[in-house]
Amino acid sequence: MKLSRRDVLAASASIAAISAMGGKQALAAPTGVKTWREYARGGWGQVHFWMAEPVSGPGDHTPLVCMHQSPTSGSYYKEFQAVMATDRLVICPDTPGYGGSDAPPSIPNMEDYGRGVLEAIEDLGYGPAGKGPVDILGFHTGNFVAIEIARQRPDLVRRLVMPGIPYYPADEREAKRVQYGQPRPYFSDSDYMARSYMSSVFNRDFGISKDRHLEMFVERLRAGTKSHYGFDAVFRYDPDPVLSTLSQPVLLPILNETLAEPTRVAGTMIQNKTLVDLMDLDGWAWFIEPERIASVVRPFLDKA
Amino acid sequence: MTEVNIWKHYVNSRDGQVHVLSAEPADAELTRKTPLICLHQSPMSGDVFADFLPVIAQDRLVHCPDTPGFGGSDRPLKVRSGDKANIQNFGLGLADALTDLGYSEDNPVDLFGFHTGSLGAIELTRARPELVRRMIMVGIPYYPAEERAAMEKRFVTPYAFLTDPDYVPAMYNRMVSNATNDLSNEERYQAFLGRMRAGPNGQDGPDAVWSYDADEGLSALAALNKPTLFLAFNEVLTEPHKHGHRLYFPDVPLIELSHLPMEGFKAGPRDVADAVRPFLDT
Image (tube, rainbow over all chains, first blue to last red; front, side):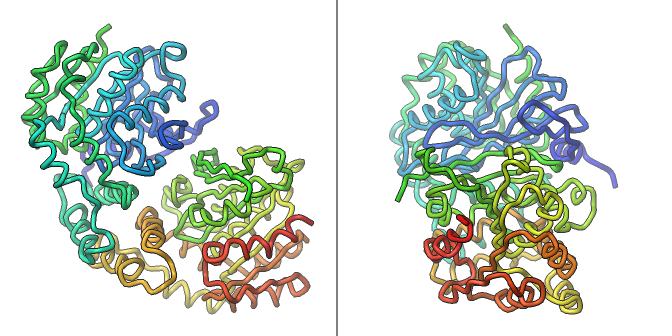
């Protein structure tokens, strides 16, 4: 059987050989990347993290935090994380209420999400009084969480990478909120789970294994009846004042996906930006061509 | 009720990370009893004890680890390498986790094992007897050898998550939409989610249970002479459990909580805590 690049990456992230690593157990992968999970205090209790760094240690690069879209979890970035973590620590949090992170009791604002995640990043030891700032990459919802962290704690964020910004004018946001910010009908529509499973796993391909589709489907299910909270917060958020005042350098990779044009529009408001056209890649590139995305992200992050 | 702090964390084992749900009284002065370790059934996780935790952790530290390969815990290395799952691997991984939590001969724990967790408790105790002070066994899947073989034939078939388009929808209908138990929709959903998280690897549970020589395990445990309590709910494994009790632990107390269904610690956490606390506090 011929192994694809995807198979190799998936194996590198999961095939394990144990090595001691301080207080945490590392999984050493063939690529020289070790992965582990941990929790920190923040948000509405605990925030769960998917971590990866070189077996030899994180080196001198600034750690990269990757914020996921709704309603997935930090494991969305598994393949991209494995590529980026060959020379730095890559931290993929589960946004509060998603994956393994504790959920808010009611629908939060984007400001609340930003605060919750930044508290957890600080609890990991980052910030001016600790291990220094981090770089943050977002995708969809994750971009608004990222800019809220940058707004609230500019000293915690060095650089931003923002593909897929859910930027819409105010009058369109409310229509989107009504469309996406509703509870999923887990208990009122007896066919909902079957339809979701068929479209998200059984009939889905995009060059990605069924096992991986199942894994991501299950991560989505973990948000349960609160899975719409992130969508609601996104479409109630006015990003204009924040985008226009970001002090950090921003990279805007434009992927060929639903938020390509909104990202371009949002980019017109960002002062210190670099726009990179990746329109030959779609949103599944995170899974099947992560090294292509990394090839534009890494040089940007490696600038002083 | 005393306020109880509940948190999640990871500890290390030979197989990677073990995910643990833990609880203790907010007032540290109340945490004076021997810590209790609750071991879950397959294919679930330590989350099944979420309702029991605030009650039993009123006066002690309680840990609910996810068995290796379930919930948030890494799958046993040997299973990842192609070996069939077995209870011994579960026991060794859990013993490692207890060691990483700081437990030792001088600082042992009590065990509460349910279904697969009861077998894991046996193998944990056989591997590291000095770590265990007292044991509570609930719903032991004890069947004589020939019945185990039949069970293995009946239950150990690949989970058809990715081969049968109706498998997951049917599971959802059975466990949530059309369920007739006393659980709320949210509780049913969480049970379904537990099975989904285990996914095709959830088969490790029945693989391990039905290939386990329960006669050998129970006789070896009896020889260790650990103070033991048998607890029974009104469920599918009540009779097998009592059968194992009669054969190997006839002089050990057996408390029947026949008004409680299979996961009695969910339906009646206070009743279960009241039943086990005198034994644990001895």
